[in-house]
Length: 288
Image (cartoon, rainbow, N blue to C red):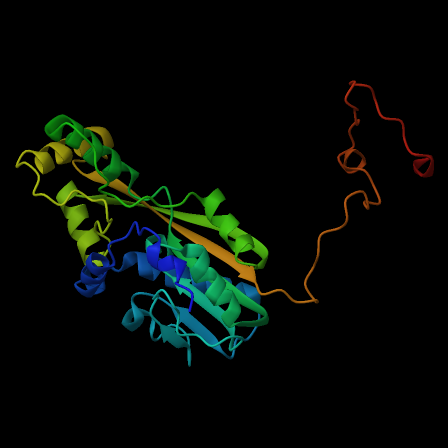
């Protein structure tokens, strides 16, 4: 039997810590991002204008999402997803991909669980999330402790996340974002919400020693100075990224072959086309 190469692959997430954080989450107190994701998913499914009879939902918060779709199979976002190949016409992976060691592997498993022309939708936190907190903690750590350590998980940029869909073998890929700005009384109130969300630091390389007493007050002051609202509060940005793709099927639209266009773009835009020597391109014989 061959060894599984994934076993020797370094993990950027401390899975034991992540499990503890999620177990103590209180989404009844700080579940607004899940509420936003649910509303947005409902609208997107209405726009698709298709009835899905065999949906599945992958999420680290199964109880929260259990009632989202009737008769949906709801499974945790474990390394190996409990989904049967070709069993579903819709798979939603929600609020877990930003902590995945292998997000492409997660999406590949979702694609394999789809029937031909089945729909995949992923929802995750994106790279604009918590930038204010990241910068404030980094500056305070440099001042107080003389170094830097990862304190906020790195989250993918939308241009990179969209590429995951094609790598996973999905057709008609689309990635878009939904930013949300939230205000808090202090940085400590934001951290309390992150704890209730199950989104506090679970990075393997995190600094595990208790920081000096001055560290967090200094970070809070930096945060207030640089990211205050002018009303005695601070602002925090969260970004939800939505990834959409379809399991390949012959009925789907396909791109035209290069050079097969029936008309030039310049004609449609009513402008003049120039070649590399900056000379007007004469019309083709069939254009006259």
